[in-house]
Length: 81
Image (cartoon, rainbow, N blue to C red; front, side):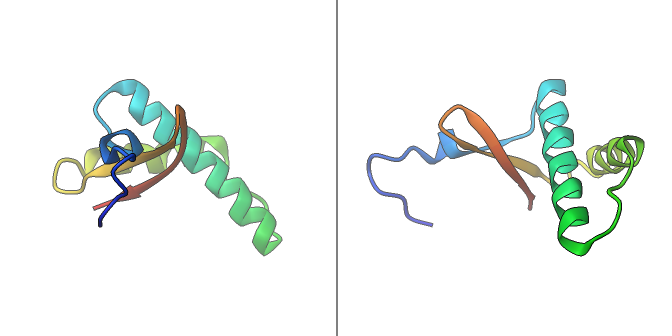
């Protein structure tokens, strides 16, 4: 992926590295679960289920790498590679 010269990709995406990053991933997952529930007309997963799913992602590392995307200083998305 090529970025314009004024955009620093290292500021857009970061590999989760700290406990705080994992907490961010959990919070972003929670938002995702709530949005999906609203979209499909069902109850969202419990907070505990979101926590457990995030913990299962953490246990998959390092073979699977999780990334957090930011818009400026705001963490807004995540993905895996």
